[in-house]
Amino acid sequence: MPTVQVEGRNAIQAVEGTKLVLMLEDNGVDVLHRCGGNVKCTTCAVEVISGDAGEMSEAEATVLRSKGIEDAAIRLSCQIRLHSDLSVRLIKTATSTGLEPGTRPQD
Image (cartoon, rainbow, N blue to C red; front, top):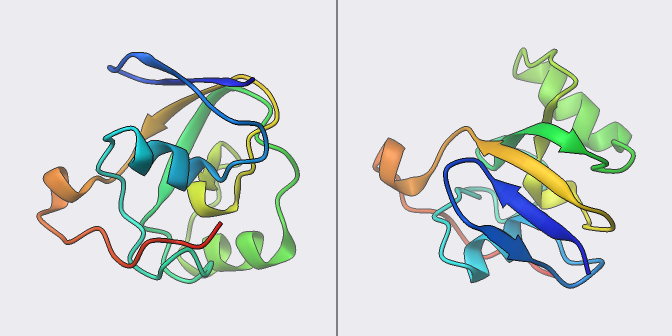
């Protein structure tokens, strides 16, 4: 069972294979996901501080590049399936931006 440490919050135990964005939302973290987890908007981006977030898909890499995001530590939480311990820093939240989170991403 992977453990996710969100900077400034308590560690969260996750079910292996769960999308990071869903694990965050289900544990009270007001992460954004404005496109509904469809790899289009980058609002669910997190900075991976440590751990293995897995391979980045071409779709994820393409949307990050299109938004001018070149830092390899920045990943889309809607595209990360949890398989090992991970430490992340939130970039945007509903609270910090004043935006509605968006449609819940599918599993």
